Every structure is written in C-alpha cells, then in structure tokens.
Amino acid sequence: MELFDVYPLYNVEPQKAYDCTVVDKNGIEYLDLYGGHAVISIGHSHPHYVKNLKEQVEKIGFYSNAVQNSLQSKLAKKLGELSNYNDYQLFLCNSGAEANENALKLASFKTNKSRVIAFHNGFHGRTSAAVAATDNLKINSPLNAQQNVTFLPLNQIELVKTELEKEDVCAIIIEPIQGVGGLDEGTTEFFVALEKLCREFKAILILDEVQSGFGRSGEFFAHQYHGIKPDIISIAKGMGNGFPVGGIIIAPHIKPSYGMLGTTFGGNHLACVATLSVLEVLETENLISNAKLTGDYFLSEAIKLPGVQKVKGRGLMLGLEFDFEVSELRKKLIYDHHIFTGGAMNKKLLRILPPLTIGKKEIDKFINALQSVLTEEKVDL
Ligand code: PLP
Image 1 (cartoon, helix red, strand yellow):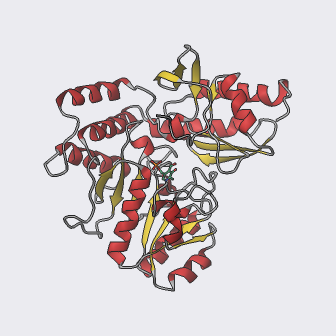
Image 2 (cartoon, helix red, strand yellow):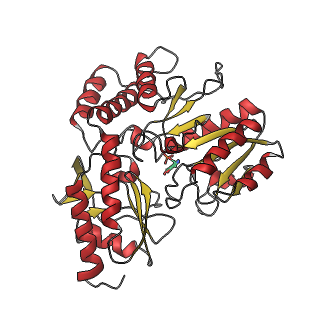
C-alpha cells in the first residue's frame, strides 16, 4: 500500500530528539525552532515526561470513559490551578480540531442557535464544523459549504455587532494570536468588546488556544493578556508534548448532562499522564516566564536583521516577515544550517515555535545563521 500523498516533505528523517535538538537517521543534529508545529512545549523526550509515561504504560494505558479514572480529576485540578481557571470544567478529547468541534457543539446546545462567527485568516482545524473558520485557506473539508459560518475581519467590532443583532449566532470563535494565518491578533479593546457583546446577545465566546496555550505566549493562555474570560477555551498541541491530546475548558454556567459529549480515546490514562507531566515541568522549570523572556530577547535581536520587515507574535509564538517568500530561506536553514523553522499561510512569514525550554544560546545560533543566509551568502531569495 502507498501512503496517501498529501504532505510535501523535507528530505530529513528524525530518529531521536532531546530538548531543542532533533537527530536525523544520519546522526545530524538539528536545532528545533518549530517544535513539530508548536507541539513540543517542555522539550523533546523530557526525562520527567518519559519516566511518567513509561511507568503508566506498564500499569494501564487505556480504559473507557465508562469507568472511573482519577487521573482525569488530578489533571483537571492541576490545570485549573496553573491556568487560573479553577472554577471551570474540563472535557478531554484527542486533537485541536476535535476540541473545536466539541466547543461549537456545546455552544449550539447551550444557545439553541447555530450560526458561528469566525475571523479572516483564522484556523481551527480540519473537520466539518471546526474547520469552517478558514475562509481563504483552501484546505477546508468538503462539508464546509454546509456550515453556517460568517467570516469577519479582526478588530471591526461594529461588524460583529451587526451580525449578533440578527440573534441567530451561537458562538464567536477566535484565536488570541492567529497561528497558521500569520500571527495577527485582535486588540485588547476588541477582545473586551467581544466578551461584552457575547454576554449581551447570549452567544458563546470560544478562545481557540490550541496553538497559543500552555504557556507558549508567555502567559498560560494568550487571551489572559487582555483580561477577558471566555465561555470555552480549546486546547491541544503543547498540552501533550507530542502525545495526541486535546480538550475544552468550560465555564461554570454551561452545565453538563450525560451523553452531551463523548469520545472513546479522550482522557485515557496515557494522555492524562502526558499532560500532567507537561504541567509539572512548566511549573518546576518556570517555562512560561522563560517563554516571555526568551521571546523578548528574540524580538529585540531579530528586528535588527537585514530584510526583516516586521517581527510578530508574543513569547515563543513568533514570526519574521520578509519582503520575499520564505520557502527557499527555510530550505537553506534546514539543509545548510540544520535549523527547523515553520511557514504560514502568509508565504513571506517565517514562523518560530520552539520548545519553551529554549535559551539565548539557541536564539543566537539562529540569528547568526539567518544573518549569514541573508547577507554573506547573498543568495537570491
Ligand atoms: N486550532 C488552531 C489554532 C490550530 O493552530 C490548529 C492546528 O494547527 C488546530 C486548531 C487543529 O488542531 P489539530 O491539528 O490537532 O486538529
């Protein structure tokens, strides 16, 4: 059987990894400034994480949600404490798209309405409903046409209000910092007004923190920079440091009932242990403040580079905008300098999403490599 060929691949095969380093099958070491798309939060194969997962798999890896699993409550408690959402509720699933599907479903149950407001260049995953917020990313599910989604530009609150006044909107879904779309973000004024309007028109405010959450932005959640409290927060990616796990964090006013949501794999023992281990390491190693400090250092250095038009993002969710498309630059960084970086829908944006353990030394290595590609080598990019 052949693989269904949907991914253009770089000619590199990682075989092992530690912290911010990935080692390929030829023993070549790469600096990982991509984290497998913002997934590696506490560093590859962190010893605490590996030890806990090994111990758990030897006991029990999975049983269904029809029986008790105290690891889920332990995880909910820890997550509530670290994120400052103690009074919220946790539903566990397996990925970001699934988290958003469940968030939209809950919003519809709660409000008895069905239309969704999303934003241009937003990305919420590739499933029938959750993907809907991807208007000009042509990777939508075929079912997308059936979804009842209105796309609006960021920061234009009057347009949001006009839609809400039609009284058929169940949810507004928004990323605090756009990931795949290219690191644009709403202003604090916009987020505060969204929160207020959602309350006024009884719509559910969903903050998609799948990429920006779990400390990546320098706060536990990026929306916490704006002082708002959404009704639902979706989480995944960095949550499991590579173990597939997702979830939604749900405000107390949304009440559960049996059968309302469900999943086979969500909240399994291994996923809980992976996520608990991530939270423990984030806390003991102060990785959220490291994300902020190292991110600030990156911003201050990167803006000095030749050809950089703009440095975007917060913490370790960063992007460098050039006046040329970055695909060749990314190839040079991988093949000549052994550094993984990310791209975006905006082809002129180089994205940096490293493990939150990264320090100045690694940032300097990247800045020097980029400097060299951009100037000394005088390549025609
Ligand atoms: N939401 C956001 C903000 C994302 O960046 C992504 C993935 O890139 C998703 C949702 C979908 O997550 P997953 O690929 O785990 O389904």
